[in-house]
Length: 120
Image 1 (cartoon, rainbow, N blue to C red):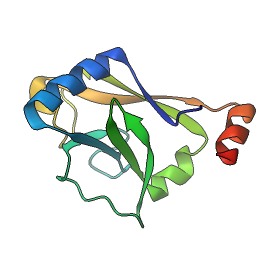
Image 2 (cartoon, rainbow, N blue to C red; image 1 turned 135 degrees about the vertical axis):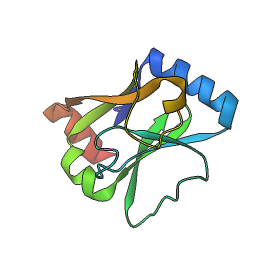
Image 3 (cartoon, one colour; image 1 turned 90 degrees about the horizontal axis):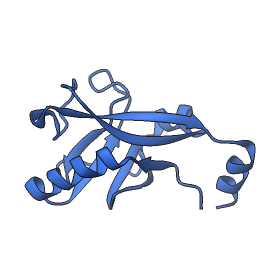
Image 4 (cartoon, rainbow, N blue to C red; image 1 turned 60 degrees about the vertical axis):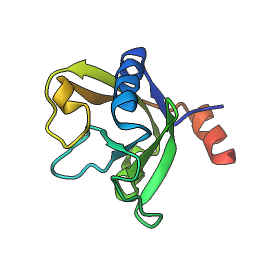
């Protein structure tokens, strides 16, 4: 099965630390002015998801990953990979005090993958 969002081992290690500190988590990527293309990680329930404005792309290490619907129209042809890197991000994400930031890497889906995604 083709996944719209995947995760690296570095990001999994950081997610595990955050789960131990905050419990269940969720990711959201809105593409807004403050967070840009950086995914933001929140404690579950701390960010309100809107069925009218957000699209669930999948799960990242058992954490739901959402994207703003407007942003999704630009990224629908792309597989996202959540990674982690040292450094301070410019968002309100939970990992910032730990000296790390989640980042997105991406690749275009092949024509075959896009066809399979449309079928499912």
